[in-house]
Image 1: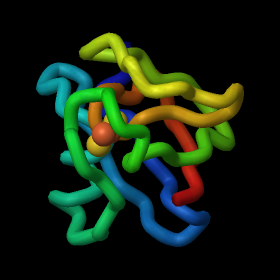
Image 2: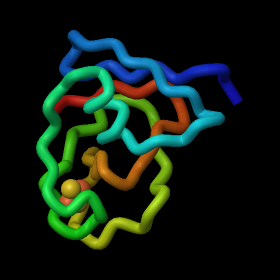
Image 3: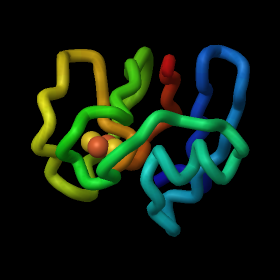
Image 4: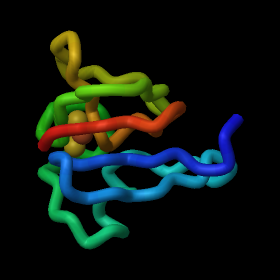
Length: 87
Ligand code: FES
């Protein structure tokens, strides 16, 4: 396991995730001062959907909203590699 994973948002913001303290992708983006879309924060509504351009995520909570291939739900997943997302 890497010490940290890098999260690149829209090719501009470079965030860091510590895998020993798993937080959701949504929380990582909020802590960095970004303003991601969300509603339920529980995998139901799909409002937090972002495009996963590169890398892998793991779901902390099983998402119930529909996820298109290449998308992920930021409120209930965490990176398990360096990732690139578009919001
Ligand atoms: S905020 Fe509703 S599914 Fe993520």
